[in-house]
Every structure is written in structure tokens, then in C-alpha cells.
Length: 312
Ligand code: UDP
Image 1 (cartoon, rainbow, N blue to C red):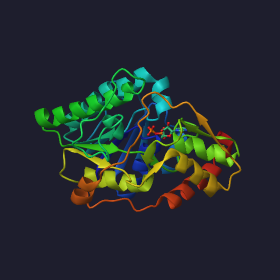
Image 2 (spheres, rainbow, N blue to C red):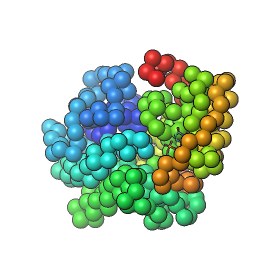
Image 3 (tube, protein in one colour):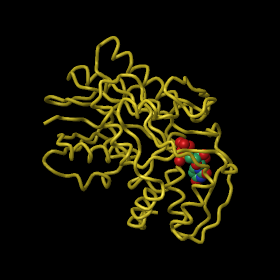
């Protein structure tokens, strides 16, 4: 039975990953300092093959016994979170990645880094393929996240090349689904509660900026295939179905049958104007592509938010 550590295991993606790995027959250790994650995300996973450790992975990580896989998912991951937690974001991307890689080295484990489309910044190439080096403002407010993840990628490749660690880097594009923290500043977990309460939907800028949203179950399947592959270079995982943020707001209003009106607020600094993954590499090498269409995924997500009404 493989034994796997998931840092950030109580977060949105981390908790879905833990669940997926348990179903694949892994013993799973979730590690999280609960800064942005929550026990509620993993309560239903309690079983003899699952263990939760509350811990800050920027400190030295000690785990007794063998570990086969280390998946480093700990990080604030919404623009609001990393604006409010800039130092923690830099620390977990830099020091946390170093500790997680050190653990993987000492345990001879396979390591997977959760990287992000933010490494491409406000891209000048569209759609974004893995060979694009990006267009990042290092000193802007988003720089703490973008540069931490770029450093994390560099450190991961260094551990691969210098220490021979079997490393993987997934560049995750916008993902949504149940367990996103309501009102965490991201578009979908902000729009859905607003729509369910018939409050104004806050679109930033004129809403013409684009994103491409992937349902979480598709993302986790892609990550698992990458983990089991022999690929060491970065791979984009996301859904290439691109839309404007205004269209997303309209879609949420329609699916919730809400009376909400759209209002327009200032665009955050360095908000990328376009984003769409080129997933030809994942298709070719992992035989992966997303299967859940936006309307279905949004319906699952809206249904989950309806069960969380007391929390927003
Ligand atoms: N956005 C918005 N209203 C909100 C929250 C976000 O219009 O209440 C916009 C945001 O400016 C961005 C897009 O939605 O252009 C996606 O934002 P999100 O935070 O979900 O992801 P990211 O910016 O990291 O792609």
C-alpha cells in the first residue's frame, strides 16, 4: 500500500486529492496549518488509512516510516489570501517547498509540486503552453505568489537534476468545485453566494478578462496521471474552455435562478487579461483531458454551496 503525504491536505484541492488517493488504495497523511484550509474539508475522510497532522510545513518536517509520494499543495491560493498573507505565501512556496523536497529526498519518494498558471503572469502568449516563460511583475501585489511558485519550480528542478529526486510539476489553471472557501476572493466562490442571496454580483473591471475553469474532479484525475507518469518537466492541467468573467457571472445567475444584478468594481492590480491552458502535452503524454462540462460542474458546485448556507 503506497504511503503518501499531502501538504495543504485540508485545503480545497488538497482535500479532494486526499480523497482520490484513499480511493486508489493509498495510506494518506494530510499536513496543514489550517491557515486557509479547514478540518471540515477532511472530516468525512476519517478512517484507518487517513491521518491528519496540524503542522506548518515551512518548519522541518519529520515523519516516521516510509513515504512513497510527497504532494506539495500547501499555499494560500486566492488573490485575496495572498494579498493578506504575503509573507506566509512566500515562505510556503520557498521554505515549504524546500522542506517537502528534503523529505522526498530522504525517503526516496516521488515529489509533486502544485504550481500554477500564475507562473505565466499576465501572459503575452495565448493560449499558454509549457515552454512559455511568462510575463510576471515581481514587485506587484501578485508577485508574492507568482515568484514563490516560480522559485518552487526552480528548486524542484534543482532537486531533480542535482539529487536525482523523481519530481513532477503540475501547472494548475483556474479550478472550481465543492469545498472552495466561500468569499475567499475568487470569482466562483464569491459569485455563487452572492447569487444565492440575490445580492449584487461583483465583477471586477469590465468583466472582459478571460479565464478557463476546470472542474476539480477532472483536475485531480490529471494530477494523478502526472504523478504516475515518467514526466519531470512541467505539465499544464486545466480546462481550455475559455470565457469572460462577465459570462461566468451571467451563467451563475442563470443556474441559480437568481434576481442578482451585476455590478462593476475596480480591477485588481496585474489581473491577467486572458488565460487559457494549452493542454496538448497532457493530452499527448497523459491521455488526459477534462470531461465535466461547465454547466454540470457549476451545478455540482452550486448544490454544495447551498448546503453551506450558514457559513456565508
Ligand atoms: N473577479 C471578479 N469578481 C470577484 C472576484 C474575482 O470579477 O468578486 C475576477 C478577477 O478579477 C479575475 C477573475 O474574476 O479577473 C478570476 O478571478 P479568480 O480570483 O477566481 O482567479 P485568478 O485571478 O487567480 O485567475
